[in-house]
Image 1 (cartoon, rainbow, N blue to C red):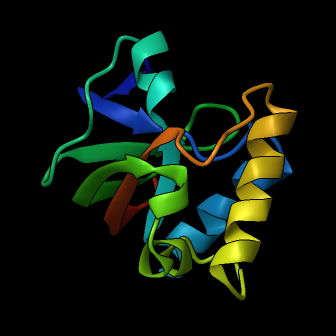
Image 2 (cartoon, one colour):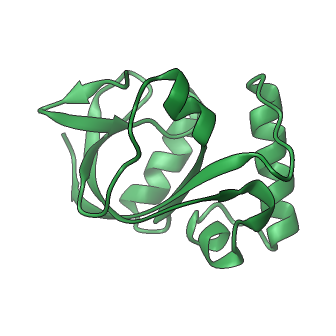
Image 3 (spheres, rainbow, N blue to C red):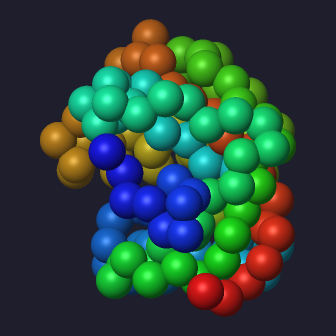
Length: 133
C-alpha cells in the first residue's frame, strides 16, 4: 500500500532524490498538472485507481507532505495512446510526444520496468489545492 498522510493517500513523483525535488517544485509552481504511472504498480501495491475529486498528499523525498493535490482526471490507456495534451501538462519541458515517450521509457527502464507500446498506463490530471504540509 502507498503511504497515508492525514487520512489521504499520497503521491510520490519520480524517484526519492533530486528528480522528486524537481517534479514537486513544478507542481508547487503550477507548471505540472499531470503525471503518468504504470497500471502494474497499482496491482503490485494493491491500490485502487485515484478518482476525480480525491485529494492526495504530495510527498517529498523524505515522505514529508509538501502540498495537497486534487485529482481532476483519470484515464487508463496504452503507453502509445497517451495524448500530447497530457504529456505537455506534465510540465517537464518535453518538446514533442516522441520526446516525452523517450524520457518515460528511459525512466521506467532504469527502474527495472521497461514499457512496450501496449503497456497500460494511468494518466492522472490534478490541481494544486494547498502548498506546504
